[in-house]
Length: 230
Image (cartoon, rainbow, N blue to C red; front, side, top):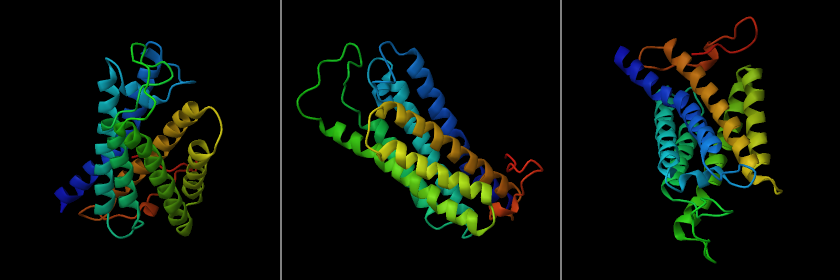
């Protein structure tokens, strides 16, 4: 029983690691890649060029860790929203697809790339679909947990989950300029929320029943009103 709880905790740790890993690698690429300008270039373009493999690896690793996080959520038991694990798996799978199916070069990046053709490549089409799917899964996850936390009197987490979902929806799907900057902000916002959720659930698993079954509402906030960290 104790080993089952330990395995659940290890799966949940994937959710703790995925966001900081991806954001950290992406930020390093934004700051160090020659010719990259976040005002004009989406972060997916970092997957191209001689150091593109680093960004590809971060997409795939973050996606795999997120899928593992979904396994941990499922292992926690029926107390969590039924849609939580499938939405997390959808997000992780879309992240992997974003890394595996490369975006077409554009807006002058990479510097040595040939001019893009008149039509989008097949892998560019798949790539264009994957990020909206990933964000759609996270928006749905935020709404699901906003309702779930509200029903259990966790107002702070309910509001944070709802705000994350609404902000991500506006940043990604609202028409307008500055798409690359808005997408980067959405990545940071959703990653921070997902990391916080994973830490909360891991803490709940630590204090839960043998085998990993736990209710995150059992983790009480400290005197400052901030949920404790795992």
